Amino acid sequence: MNRLKELRKENNLLQKDVAKFLKMSQNGYSQYETEITDISTTILRRLSGFYNVSIDYILCLTNIKDKYAPSKVITPTNYMNRLSEIRNDLDLNQFKVANILNMSQTGYSAYEVGICDIPTKVLKKLSLYYDVPIDYILYLTDERIPYKRKK
Image (cartoon, rainbow, N blue to C red; front, side):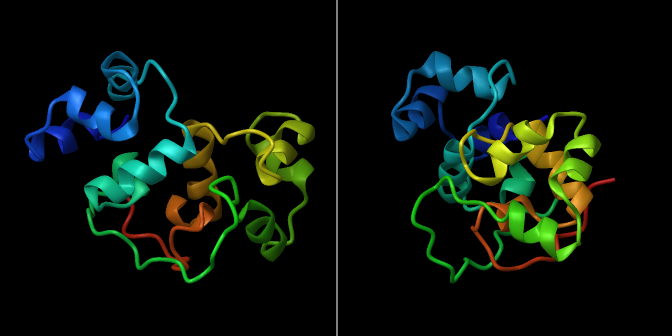
């Protein structure tokens, strides 16, 4: 579940307006709202900034709209993530995390090194498992404690 339609309507926007901002077709954007198509981390970052809300809010992990304080870490690309750092901090290996996600270690490794985009369902699972905001995983914030989780 995501809140894209709700956010768009609150801001008195049409799908074509948001699609234009994202430089994509209205039909392509519509598929994000209806969850037919997975939302890439690049698009999630842009939507978070556009609506000035956290990715956790967009993906319904919290009911708190506030955006986290911005990260002071400058990442060279949008594909950077903190998965390896978080996993190492918890003294876990890739195999253990991959098993939790019900996937191969090679598949999980591809997320850590940025070879593959992290699907939203996997981002949500990792955020909940590691108990960190998705915004933290994606270097949008340095705040490691998530807002109160939605029940």
